[in-house]
Image (cartoon, rainbow, N blue to C red; front, side, top):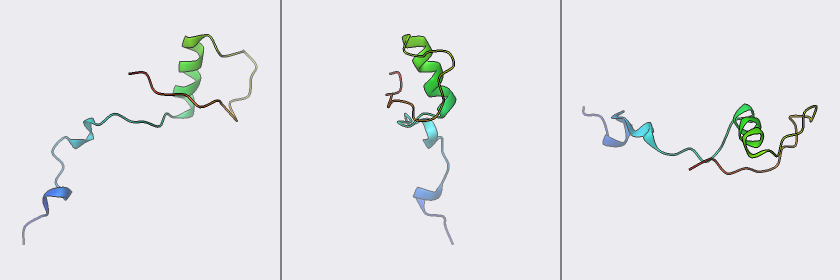
Length: 51
């Protein structure tokens, strides 16, 4: 029985992610100058990933 082509892994993970991890969001906010030291890492503002 052959494997369906949608199940094959042929490097299809190269797609751009549109959701950032919490530490990535904090790093991005620091880079943009929108991060204040001592701020809670909960309830962060929405951020778009860098393009």
